[in-house]
Length: 417
Image 1 (spheres, helix red, strand yellow):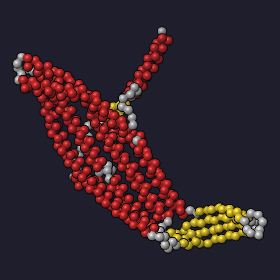
Image 2 (cartoon, helix red, strand yellow; image 1 turned 60 degrees about the vertical axis):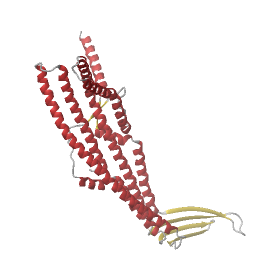
Image 3 (cartoon, rainbow, N blue to C red; image 1 turned 180 degrees about the horizontal axis):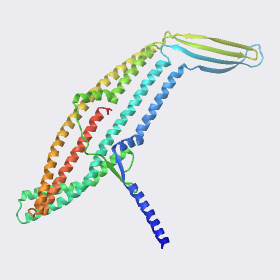
Image 4 (cartoon, rainbow, N blue to C red; image 1 turned 180 degrees about the vertical axis):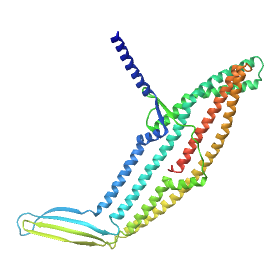
């Protein structure tokens, strides 16, 4: 008996553990912060930009390596008249740059500016991903919570249309009112029928950004977000200041200006003298050897105006970058102002909807008491319940729109810390 009992308990424990594991696999909770990090990890364009930044950093090392010694080994076979056979000349030459007005230090400075531009492009892409994940996440979160509302809407719509048809058959309802009820029923049922497509489209958009499927045979994802988070609005001027300080496109243009200015200086000093230290060893045949150590001074006095034109080209590119920075600042101001005004309107609508929810709740409580004493029918009671649920969902929809707009405002400001 004990043996059978032990076998049964073991079997039960294994199956319970298996069911628990299955349940864990089938229900995964996903927060907004985790979804954002997933998009950073899986987006191929962001990965490509990371490699671009790495390549720019290597360019800095390439530039500064100009100060390292250059060593050259050569062997030259030659024939001399009057002397039999082929003779070899072996040479070993080492040189190192000591000073230059337009040398490796200046080239590394330009390469660093290019690295900054590449890094800011990467951060700009991260901001773009973050905002799109936030918007699609919040929309999907709302539609996941809409499921209960859709069920209540379906029930309420059928009850109301039956009530209207019954009243119309008894000539207790004006025909225009009956037609209006029929139109409301059709609109409500359209929402019911379209709900699966709406949530599928929203989740597909989020899947695209985070690189992970929502529903498969092993896992179903439930989104987690606190709808009670308070949304505060500061004065408009503070958002302007944040945007000018944090927008990556403005920072990029400033780095491009600095890069073109440094490039202009490089070409301006391109014909300046430079000093190198040179050491050379050579051997001819088996006996003749020579060693030379000295300084090598060079000055390119005239190069056919090549550097002159390159300097003017860099100057024109710098002016172009300055104008583009000004355009970026104007666009930033417009984006911040428009988003700020939209958010201000939504916050006022959200406050007004709070009142509607409270009123619908009070009506529901009153109708519940009336229904319990038989003063109203169950259809009327269910209608008040549905109205309260509807007002709550309307509030939740407005809250999501407001939260998305608030995220858009932060995106317009470059996501300040």
